[in-house]
Image: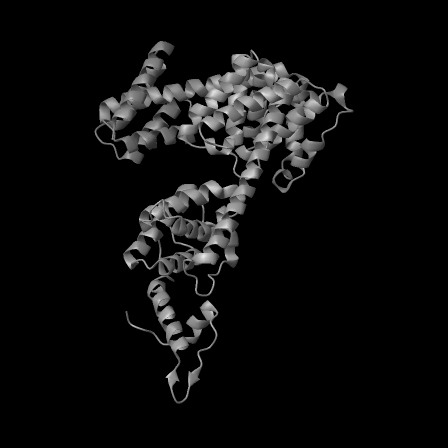
Length: 476
């Protein structure tokens, strides 16, 4: 390996002290050792600044971390490149911009997954506790440091007392993180007790069922069920609770949804169910009307969920059976603490009063509002089915590629066309022919297919839809 001179900028980057020289003896042994260390790290720093991973350009702090890790473990440049590509893939899959995005105790699962991926690339034996502890600790250090990350001087794999100290620190961090997850488990049990009206004895039984199933899988918290293998255990827990307290199938469904909410929660676990949800008919009606109002006002899905949870909680605390009871004239004395706290946020400030007007209008006759939503949904469903039937008939004529079929589906979804109208039918025929560059009287064939669907029965349209799905699946 070629040595490099002590570049001032490189020295400043690693915060090393200036190298002192002895006029008579030249560089000291200490300065030579430092130069060797710099040369080793410099080899890994080459090409770092402009490197872009296979899937995304890596953050400079992430590149610095990988370089330091590779130099500390003494791996080759080829292995370092594999680490870069794997980190890029991991960030892209999880929609993170850098390792700073999953710092903190709430992201132990993500950090552990990345450590396991790196372990395989670095060919570290699972039984090598020294290297495994070092790797895991360095990943946690990088994630938790965020944009302030900077490798320590002489950052090499520890041994002896230093290693023991780092292992103890890691053990404490993990213990603290698990403690937080256990608190979230208790919060879930609190939610179940409130929603299903369980008493203290019932609560103990629920905790026994949860703990028994976790212990069988050698787990200590529900968060550890956040994987494919955990689905079976989750269902077993919910089914056992359902049988123990003779709950309905709908209650079982509610409970599964809340367990899933708890298990998949990243940072904060916010319960989504409350006693109002157990009235199946009212809940389905309210949610249907609420979703329609959200769609009409183009409200983000996550923001809508936050607002609906607030509506349910305020309705419950006011002693109401429906979220829309909050907006009835006869209930003017009601409290809207949580709802107002959500609507007063920046996101809702421009549509707050529009939403309140829509809620009040729906509350005047909620059943009428529900009927209107159902009629609208039926029209949308019938329109969608007719469009899929047309695509099925067109594919019979033109034998489209899968991407072409998906393009047609997107085309119809983006257009407000009434295919029973002759003008809209010819408009669609012209635009589809242009979009897919179809030839040979294609416009006439498209209109013929549309007219055939218009004259088909509901049963025939359903059959076309089934064939549409089968054709789509069969295409590569």
